[in-house]
Image (cartoon, rainbow, N blue to C red; front, side, top):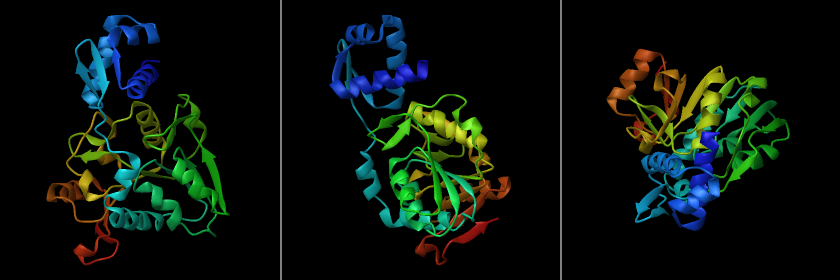
Length: 261
């Protein structure tokens, strides 16, 4: 599968820091033209760079721990507002991300529900909820995102999902909800198509940004939870497309205020 090979090529480059095109051709048993096409896609992603005769690791995405430390109060408040939308016996998907990771800490331990996830942090958090059924998806662990990837095309078809709490690297009106990781993209896209209700948890730094891969359009989400009022064009977009907008920040002088409904 092309997506799997691209991810393997990227991982190989990051593991070795610098590799030649000939080495990549030999390692993955493909032609130089194929490797050049793969490298072209990865260069768009911004995590590798070209050097004479090969490529080097050039990760521009912060380590998960560093990203988690930024805007921590905002992210925790967004997660609390998201958790308030969970009802008893819901079947929810919780995405891997530095905001969504706080969701399990905010859920009522006595509430019966089912949690599907590919996030290591959510797995650990859900394990401490005595009334939560936990379903783990993904067969391969990605340390940089603390998530499991690698699913069969039909794997998510067997599950019903009432609500999907999603994370994003960037959100824009033009490109929707975007991320960088090719294998995580497959999971996000399938979940977005499967869930009855799509809820995006995004801190203010994500607005107006877009990265390589779109997994859903902005109009597809049902609820957007953030910590301060987004730019006016986003408020207007939510109103026009029936997206429920919830703002949690103190600077807005309201707690979990619904700006649109």
